[in-house]
Image 1 (cartoon, rainbow, N blue to C red):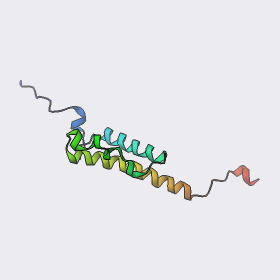
Image 2: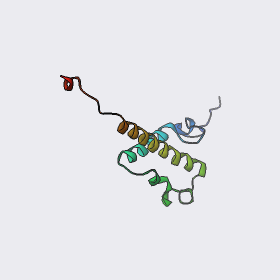
Image 3: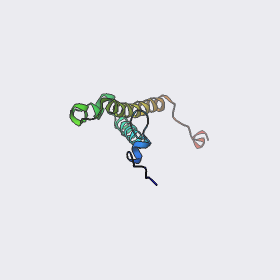
Image 4: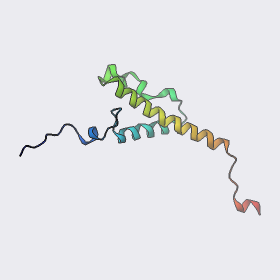
Length: 98
């Protein structure tokens, strides 16, 4: 009986159509959100740094764009969350009303 050969790691088989494994996408989103919490602007996306660009890494520009987008998605989501929180009036505790 002939064995099937493996054609890539587990993470490659579970990658989305954009080429990023779900765990990597989640990590990049988390890093973007943390940057927003620290007060960093969205234009500090580390994927824009020259050492992380396809011309330096040799990776496919589509995969790089997916990574860049994932970080930005996390940053934007956290920023929207922060803006909503600031817009809400402070919660009043029932003890304050007595």
